[in-house]
Length: 125
Image (cartoon, rainbow, N blue to C red; front, side, top):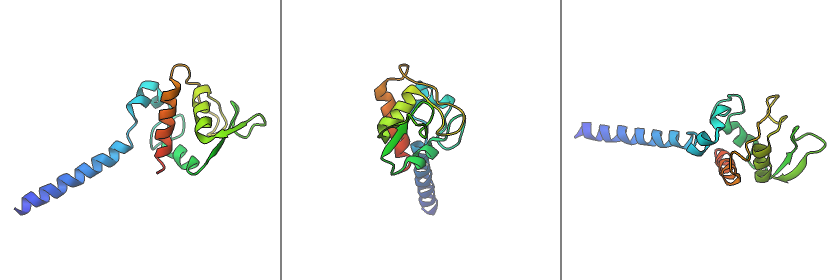
């Protein structure tokens, strides 16, 4: 009886650990869209880790977009969601170092980019 209870507790622990890992796995849409060539969830690759992006923008409502970086004189202010969608769609540089974000539109549909933006931002919750 004791070994059954221990086995059940161990199995429950593994299931809980698996569900935590599942929430931080790269979504299939990201794999199909080519995001994994430059990004990981929890570690910098070529681009920033998505967890770092989520932390940077947690609670932020506004985004300044320019192909040359948010601090550029020509940067346009927009909502955070719109700005990140613009950055992913059109690409740009200056926000995370010297390596530019390559444009992803039209290869990746706008609705898929929006879904991925929501996934990344939800990592901070």
